[in-house]
Length: 360
Ligand SMILES: NC(=O)c1ccc[n+]([C@@H]2O[C@H](COP(=O)([O-])OP(=O)(O)OC[C@H]3O[C@@H](n4cnc5c(N)ncnc54)[C@H](O)[C@@H]3O)[C@@H](O)[C@H]2O)c1
Ligand SMILES: O=C(O)C(=O)C[C@@H](O)[C@H](O)[C@H](O)COP(=O)(O)O
Ligand SMILES: [Zn+2]
Image (cartoon, rainbow, N blue to C red; front, side):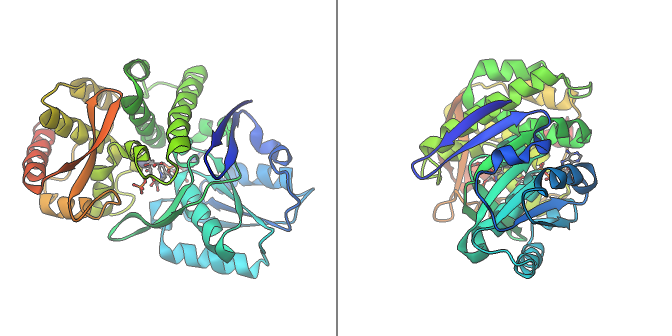
């Protein structure tokens, strides 16, 4: 087992990564909790919940709830229903919540933990590649129809327990989605990381060592940034590379139509185009585009997609200031910077970008 420590000015926790960790949960729980409540989804439940229950039940009273798989469960209604179950299960301030699943479950369960009785402990047990990102850093949230993650908090977990054996069952679409966030970590970090990822062929079975290496480096990039700016006052915004358009696409198309990573992949392409225009520079747009194509990312968008709607949604992004869209751009690969982009410029670049995607 490997471990990465995340240490901010207010807290510290370990991200433990290795095979079979779901069978050893007692190692990671060092308080005598009154009760444990596991939140998982309908795909993960049959695969991994029995193992986690078996490893906890000798030592703790455990209850659980299962939400429907999919982004639409990251909603106010599902959140409220879980809070009701948590109350009825008799949880108190000495109880623990465990998020067992991908980023959807992690964000939702984390928000339940952050708000129930003004906050109780929680542990992230990520089960997707994407969740190497979502389980670290303490952003927890639910969606609003108007925008992604608009209701949320910064609420770090007590621990992240990443049993990488669970990754063997994720479907190809989710492998792609998760790799988009690894690509993001590489683009904001440095060229050698991107060059390594460029070698990956997601259409073939993943090589365990290679995946572990990429997950580890991705987590390290994220942890280093979060340690310096947990509440996103400045450099944490770089982790949002590709998300300004990505999130707008997710809410505009309807949550779940594109996976988060698919939307971020398109958002990164656009952010690179904007960077090239803004800084009069050339970035590896083409190599990213070709890698995404080779790996069957759905890059085409419906021709009916409305540029003004997307821009209005980008103005509801959490980085926006006084109705002005802020995007994370790259001066060079590995040199992110947040810039304000005028509406006029944005409309022109987005129209051109969408036209080019349709033409290709
Ligand atoms: N908090 C953060 O910092 C942060 C970072 C990135 C993304 N996110 C959020 O994370 C969410 C996306 O996370 P995700 O891509 O993990 O989606 P997800 O949790 O919806 O999981 C994707 C799919 O894979 C299934 N699944 C999960 N683990 C599995 C396994 N081991 N085997 C088989 N199937 C499995 C799920 O049931 C689901 O159908 C989005 O809501 C996004 O906004 C948050
Ligand atoms: O951790 C961060 O900070 C990120 O921006 C990571 C993103 O991958 C993630 O999707 C996050 O949930 C986006 O945050 P938001 O503040 O734009 O909702
Ligand atoms: Zn993301």
